[in-house]
Image 1 (tube, rainbow, N blue to C red):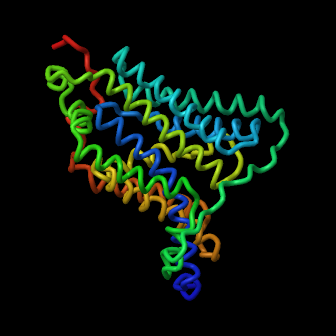
Image 2: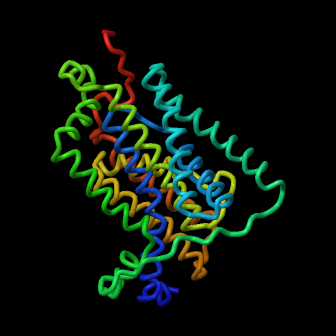
Image 3: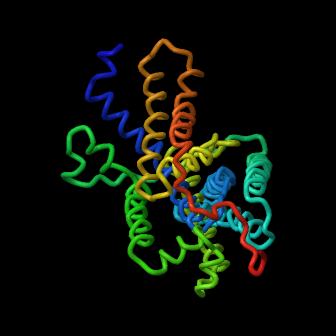
Length: 313
């Protein structure tokens, strides 16, 4: 058994699977990082991803175009995120309650719409996004195939993480966005349009979360199933916390959780004598352990999850 695991073939396949499992978490985690920098906690990321998955499938199925499907997934995620934004920003409702309610609501809506679409029949598989092999880099032993023989959405997340990190560290606008999460009252006093920036952050939150859900359909599975996100939205939230609310930290945490998921799949494939249910718990056990390990290290924005009402004391 150990001889099967400690082979170059196993490790290469494991790393490739880890990247594929991490990418949707990274998209959702990056969207959550942006919203939390503006003080909005979106526990409804599970619903955002599920909406993105369903509408990307529906858009691709009816149009025959993956690009149209991806745009539909982005729009579906943005719509759900904006619903949370209106409840949190405009109506100043409890953000945790709003997010959980949205998760339950979207689960029911997508299941209902899928049943209307399918009529009890199964759909043909959607042709997934093709892989784009980068010459020379893909030939690097062990990691080359995992990192540089992937689809366009995988490459895009690398640049998005770098861009968002640069935005917050090196631009005045990025500092303005981040200041809202720390003290929206002080930001408002300094002339920063708090509500406008919060709505912008929620749109970006939804678009990126929608891409994360669309990735499951357009790259991983090629079809839609009810509740196919299976808690990935919550794991993305954990990745943000473990990554200390920083884009690169979040990306590292997403790869950690993706690796845990890939490991349990590969261990089942080689026939490790453990119940499949026990192996399936591995990613979530690591998520809990990571959160417990960072329980006393609060790196979050000071005003995270607290509705801001202009003029209120």
